[in-house]
Amino acid sequence: MSTALMNNYARFPVEFERGEGATLWDADGNAYLDFLAGISVCNTGHCHPHVVAAIERQARALMHVSNLYYNRPMVALAERLAARSLGGRVYFANSGAEANEAALKLVRKARPRGEIVVLHGGFHGRTYGALSATFQESKQAPFAPLVPGFVPVPRAPAALDAAVHEGTAAVLLEPIQGETGVTLLPDELLQAARAACDRTGAALVFDEVQTGMGRTGTLWAYEALGVRPDAITVAKALGGGLPIGALITGERLADVLAPGDHGSTFAGGPVIAAAAHAALDVLDDPELLARVRELGTRLQEALRDLPGVVAVRGRGLMVAADVDRSAPDVVRRALLEQRLVINATGPQTLRFLPPLIIDETHVDDAVGRLAPLLA
Ligand code: PLP
Image (cartoon, rainbow, N blue to C red; front, side, top):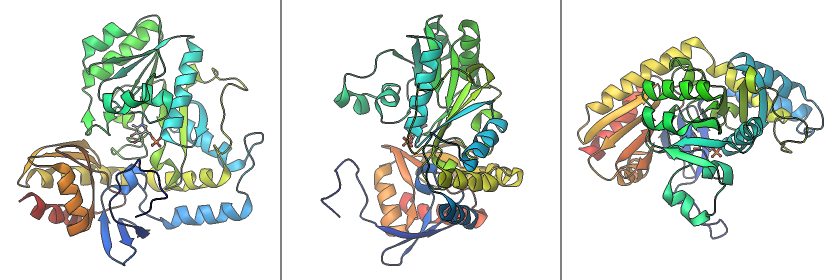
């Protein structure tokens, strides 16, 4: 649609103009049902009035001061995030990749020159450190040489255990691998990661960029897994639609970074912090989270009943369906013929990440729109 934009995205020929809840409208006024939420960003739904009001209010008071100074929304957000997760300290960033970069620097500083163990099938972002942690040939190869010191291992407890030793700085993993097809990691693998880190003093870091902010039916995915990490990275839905990332540590890693070690001009700005408070007000609600779990079950069951669906998996409203045909074709037809927004994480895998404020009618509507494409 424009030759001014770099050619690094395969965009669909649709221009969105407006959004409300789970509905998007294109430039011609056509309404779409959004079951992707900007890739798990708009968990509160589009333009949630509480988020919009917080942004408007803060934008009138103060937009930016840099990290040479404090601002109230940032401080309060750090206190809230730490209290609601691992109890340590918070570093703010502007994206998921940047939150992971901060985690990588922190764990390296905690154990100088230490290796970082990552899993096959993981995705941690596109910047050099995050990309080096993302063991995928197609994403890494054109950009070699990468950052050294990353050790990719298969998703098997024995392999992970064997890779972690006294020279390991951290094990970094997504509790549910999102970009590579909503792959749930077995409990034994997460327990092996915890045990290996306890044995060697390495840090266990969960990338909750996609799984966080209520997506899986608890505020953070780790809460339902019985394994407590030493740090988590979060982003995507944290800002209610605006860009923010955060690294949240437990007590053990809270004091590793010192003045001058890391930083970012925009990070923790007052407008984005105010938006994040509003997003947390909406999403950190036991009733909403219970609904996410219920609706996730409903979505999975309905998908399983569709012809052409081979397998369904997920947790909460992070769901994938393997299909017996080209998933990218289904995604394209869903968008252009059914006005249903979903995406594909692989040649035969559809992914569903709806806003978390939906109800049963949205689930049934989405599955209804998909059905003719899979018949
Ligand atoms: N980590 C995970 C698990 C992700 O899913 C993503 C993005 O999809 C990232 C990191 C990178 O986040 P961002 O695109 O905000 O840099």
